[in-house]
Image 1: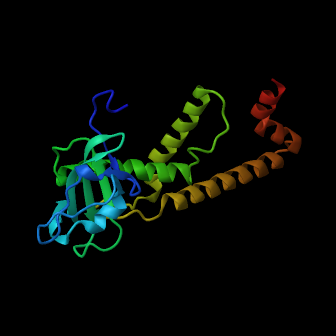
Image 2 (image 1 turned 60 degrees about the vertical axis):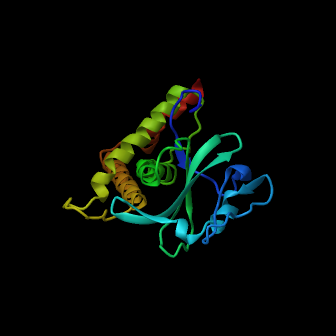
Length: 223
């Protein structure tokens, strides 16, 4: 779809994705080309073959990573640019591999642009886990849209609860979004219990209270 719309794209590449070896030129530390067996090799097999001297330090938002970039061909995607990134200069730990159709972009630009994706990733994680973005049983697109809007609104207001009173530079949230959700749920239950107690004290019947709580569900069942 991105190719159909003539749009630039950038993403994380799965490490089991295969690269066409004839399009990939790797050189050892002494400058000799590295022979790659087979017509295709997985990306995770190519990363250890790239020499440490091929990596360069790239600093984005005051964080430095050690990256190696090259243009290759991927089946189904054509010619793309890969950026292999490590957090440590020793090239230890897990590497992140980014891929883009813009083979003319350098590593720093690719990494800078990809960081715009991070808030979206955190929203997916928070939205699906504590906020129930994907936990609904609805049949109509309009009803699904309303559910999503409620999740978006909750996600927009919850930071008011978990941020510290002072928004000075470098201050961190005082609680996680999960903790904020649980605290709000407890406050809601407390308010509900106090409301029921108050109505019972005023003489309202339990049956009438339950009827008012579940009136919408009873109406839907009657249809």
